[in-house]
Image (cartoon, rainbow over all chains, first blue to last red; front, side, top):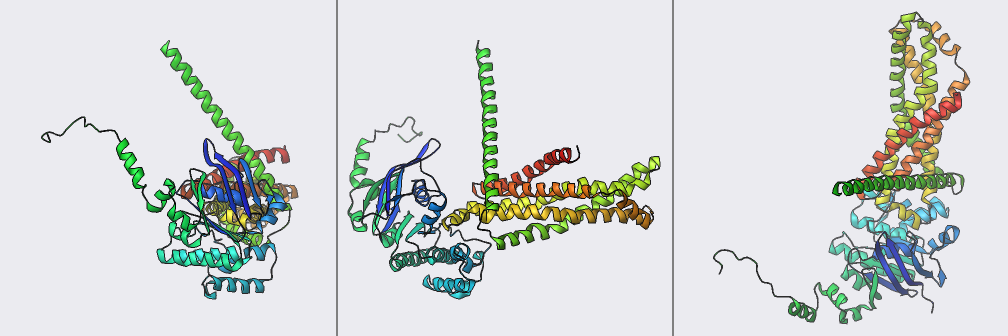
Length: 270
Length: 267
């Protein structure tokens, strides 16, 4: 079976700093993959390379078996029609009301009639748990959680084949995180779409992912299911899940630690 | 020997700095040329976003009218007063009306109008696009299959190019009216004679050259505002820097282009 997204030996540097180092990743059709990693590990750059916002230095990105790494113009436009994306901060257009944000692609590029666009916006809002009351509001009048939902509605409105989620739960309270995670999962399932999520939120990753790819210092260091992740003996995976290193690693560090001899002692302590 | 080494190190440091500044300048210039080319392509190639163009025509043109009008009326009034002070010394007061209209239409209308619009509109465009850049709205546009040059840059540059000549036309009329008010009510000129003198030596070329300048200035204001905003980075501070750069660079460009255009049109 041809992977929906196939990434091979992807490299990207910004000046002397190499952000992505030979990244290899396969995402199968209908699969929800979460790229998990700490801050500054290259998650966002990887996502932007796939979407085409950043051009990689070397390596290939294939969608449905077609190399799209350096595609531009009309070919890139056709490709973008397959994509839907939820940005970290929502990235809603301030100058447009909510309904126009949701139907932007259909309204401006596919020239959908206004009445149909409004109906679609209402339907899509409903699917992300919002009512039509917010349709004519400006994005600045919405709360953070509502903005994320509208962003999600915009991402799914044109029924894309691949959905990208950039840190979908960052900045939200735990309750709202759960709501957004459920919505992401249901959107992927209902649309039959392929999902790629980048996050450092382990709870979200557990809920959204069919497969998890752990990224560290620009390299995919581990791949597997959620269950495999929990059983993994990989030291980086273990450290990420538990917030500390394995007992064995800690022991090794303690035994290796050189004896510290104080140079000075406080008067009277001896 | 040590002193010689220190001097040679210092010289290398200076050359290095000059080299870095020169390379940075050339890189920025290259980026600007490329940006201009993409903006022109965005204006000429479909799809055209007429609703966005309409919004910009209103925002850049109509909303700038009070600022430009106010500048023009006081400029015309001061021009009449200052000309009177000078011309009365050799009994040439009758030339005031001609001086006012020629100065306003050929020079002051386009330049002062351009500078005022650069301050108001250039800053606003840079701030809007800069905020869109740092909040990933421009990236979102790209993922929604929309070329930011066609949706964001083209309408703004086109609207500024169209509206500045119209604003300058209004500024010309208001400026001349300002001169008229001062000449009639303060300096005691005869109204009919003043009006006759005003239009006696005015040629269509005077007005057209001013409007041509205004169109070029409008293009520059829109372009520089978009360029700085589009390339802004680094959060709120970056947006602030972009806004300042947009106003400063477009104001300087207006002053330089004013000389070039004057030399070309009247030289």
